[in-house]
Amino acid sequence: MPTHISAPVPIPTLRRLPFLLLALGLSAYAAEGRPLLSLQPTIARPGDPVLVTVRGLSEAPTGTIGERPLRFYPVREGFQALTGLPVELAPGAVQVKVSAPSGTVPVELTETLNVVAAGWPSRTLKVANKFVKPPPPEVQARMEQDKAAFAAAFGQPFAPPLFGENFAWPRQGRITAPYGDLRTYNGKKQSQHYGTDLDGATGTPVYAANAGTVVMTRDNFAAGNTVLVHHGAGLYTSYFHLSAFDVKDGERVERGQLLGKVGGTGRVTGPHLHWGVKVDDMWVDGETLLKLDFGTAPPAVTQRDKE
Ligand SMILES: [Zn+2]
Image (cartoon, helix red, strand yellow):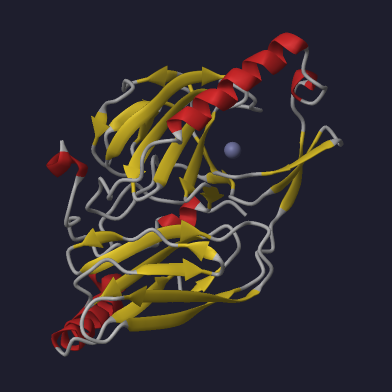
């Protein structure tokens, strides 16, 4: 089900209204010293990123989503933690618990996240046989090197967010394959799609979905020419199959900055952008990330402050 999408645009005021009303309500609570826990999205699917926001606390809380610990970082109006729901998670209720020792009375907050069935679409793809057969030793060795390079790039120390805005699409383009697609390659090998494919001609621009630091510019066997951007908050975005790089490792980028060009490098059936989002060590649905409202306030502490 291809969906037409648009270029990075500000969120319309009307869509922000509920958040603004919520924020106004929250300041009243905060003034009374009553902390408040909120979750996005309110109804989630397996593979969704989840944004946990706590307001009205003076010290960083600790917390869990299910059994998984949350890593909180300060934002202007409180604390946030970003995590994801495993793709294999069964539908049902997931408990989010937050506690803070601050003040005279310890604070315990709980909220329920309702997880509904994902209903992944499935499709059959044809690719070159070299991608389906067990790879020859030299390719296996190369893929091991790729794996190590990805692990190193994803091993950035946890940092507060490097972004102060919501996330934006990395390019204009039709979605040719959504996150979660179940795939059968040449009638044999099966896999799940952990990214969003956007169509585009070779050479068309690819932009950073948000501000961050480039932690990989590399030619990988399956992903092809790859850019990885670390955004802080345990969050990374990936841009696969590029035909050209327009950034270097270690470079700071802003939202909307040119990262590279669409291409057909790596394991592909044709030129397109595979856009991936990794948070808390899980590949999550980028379309949901784009809907998260971070409050668009600059983070209380940025990496630049520390440098
Ligand atoms: Zn893809």
